[in-house]
Image (cartoon, rainbow, N blue to C red; front, side, top):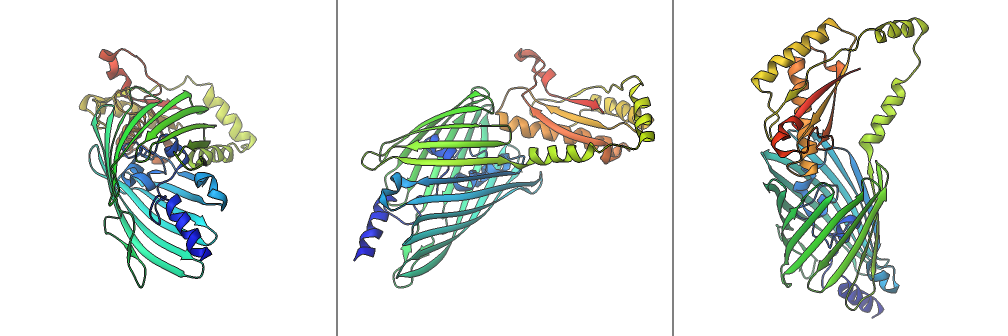
Length: 412
């Protein structure tokens, strides 16, 4: 009898069904869970796997929260997500391990996710979930679920997202089959300027009322302080959140209210592995050279610095234009005449479009220039690339935004 009472409490706390609270995340819940059209980090696995295609570095994020304060029995939800970019053609893969419930009732999910781009400005994604439900004295059940998502830019700073959860209508149970939650989300997001995001989701779960979710994210101090707020309907819930941290480690916190139940606290961490790896590589390369090689490098530093010309791109393009191809030929000739020189190609964009999209576009432009130089006979080992997106504009005058759509060549 005690087991039945505990399970009833769990179902009430989870709002009607098992695996109901699987969509979680400290950053996301701080925005009222309106994330379908944002989905730009590893939390995209839970909210729209198409958004994984926006991730351009290795990301790990995790969370732990006490649902409604644990309701006196440590009712919790925790997960760890990994997003790993492969390349432009394959896209980004993701893995998630999630566990929720209490000691007597444990819900576990392992998820494999994939986000990719088949059409320009339209990303697709899917999840494959393995569900495991364990109840003390009742045994364990398993099931398999499939999600599908789409994310697209509809106009400059606007994006739209579409997400279907458990599209295959999975069931669980041996004697009687129970449907796992099926969900349909549609969302829009607007970024009027860098560091500000507004989002709106319409969410419909089969058998439940339609919900409206609204969220806001505002970056106060870049990389150090971000504030969030959101509101949901059915039932009315308010959310507040913040982020703090450094350039490659961030701490997220979210607080969510409920009209009748205690507060839900959610604590998360996100780690950017790519920057950490790059710093480690730089340290490895700073090994002291033999004295003769130092003297030779000092002689090279005494020479006048090499200067390579900048190339430019059309709006929202990463293709090398004919006039810029001639500039690259000249740059290649200079590099051939200076075989010890290496370069960094910096990709830049104008501020039109989202910051995340422009960061990816900057990478595409830098890699286009790199590939062209390789075709002209420059060794790949001599070329590094980096994207600054819209972060380093030359001008803020809209009529001169073409000056921002560029690749600069830094000679080392």
